Image (tube, rainbow, N blue to C red; front, top):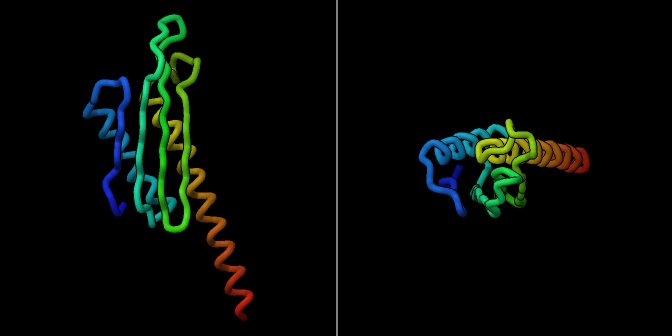
Length: 118
């Protein structure tokens, strides 16, 4: 990654373990797209309604050469998937799929251009 991962936490206390997990997941994205220019992760807990449990929203913005991938995920109703770590993991999973898809599209375009030249 050309720049370090930017992490913004809103209404959440800073946690070295959570930030380390975010950085680890961000580095894994390079398997899908080696030209990552920047990655910004925002994690927030916008509402504090105790009857609905703790909701977390994760937003990931990845800039690569010529494209941008933005993913937003909310932790689910299932108590096993309701925490900050779940929201971050889910968002990174979707981001990885989108980067993989972007890479496949770019490869198809490269092949088409090569065929057009010959």
